[in-house]
Image 1 (cartoon, rainbow, N blue to C red):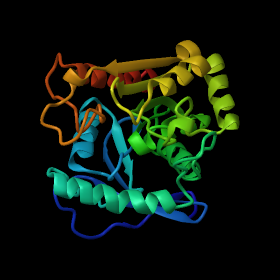
Image 2 (cartoon, rainbow, N blue to C red):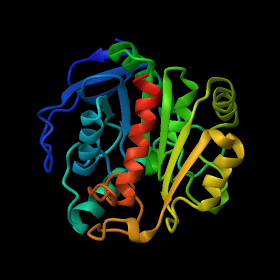
Image 3 (cartoon, rainbow, N blue to C red):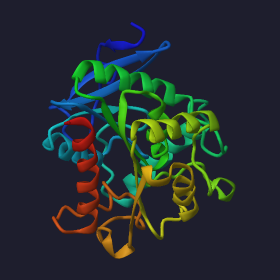
Image 4 (cartoon, rainbow, N blue to C red):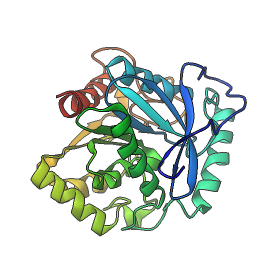
Length: 279
C-alpha cells in the first residue's frame, strides 16, 4: 500500500539491544518500503539514526524521548537494528558495512553540495503519516551525523514543527563546509516557514568536531537568522568512555547525569518538542 503501513519488514537477530517492546512494521511511499520501529504515546518524533544505524545508544535516546511524553518512530535506513557497537571492533565493522552501501546508493547524497537526498521524500511522507496516526499539532524530527541535515530538508513538510540537527555531517569535504545537504529550493521553503510560521531549528555539535565544521553552523545562522539555535559543546563535555573523538551529542558521547552539558542539550531538545508538539 503506497504511503501507508504494512507487515513487518525486518525479521532476524538483533544482537545488543532488546527491541521486543517496539512495534515493528513497514512504511511504503512511492513503491519504496522500509522497516519502521515505533514506541510510546503522544505526538510523534522521528529519530533518524546516525551511522551505523539503530544502535543500543540510539534506542536509549529514543526511550528518553518516550519518557518525556512522545511517540517515537525510528525508520530503518541502514545497518542492523540493535547491533552491539560497544567495542572498537564491532563499531568499526558496523560503520564500514553501513557506510559503504549508503555512499554508493542513489538515495543518499554524501559529497555533493546544494542537494537534498532523495530519501528525504520518503521521510517527509513518513512524517505526514505519523502526524495523522498520532495526532497533536505536528511532529518532531531528529537527524544525527549522516542524517543530521535530513531533519532540515524534511521541514518543507508542514507537519514537521520541530527539526533537530544533531552533529549534521554532510556534505563531506571542504567544499561543502559552508553549507548543508539541502537544495536551494527546499531551503527557501524552510526559510519561509521560519519567517512566517515561527519554525525553529535546533543544532547540536562539539566545537572540535571536524565532521561538523563551524562554517556549517555559521551558514545556518546566516540563512535562518534567529530561527536557528545552536548548542556547541567542549570536548570536556563528552563522555570520556566513548570509543571515538567527541561527535555524537545525544548518543555515543552523552552523559546521563543531570547538570552535564550533554544532558542540558537533551533538555533543550525535549523543551523544543514540548513547546511545539504539546501546546
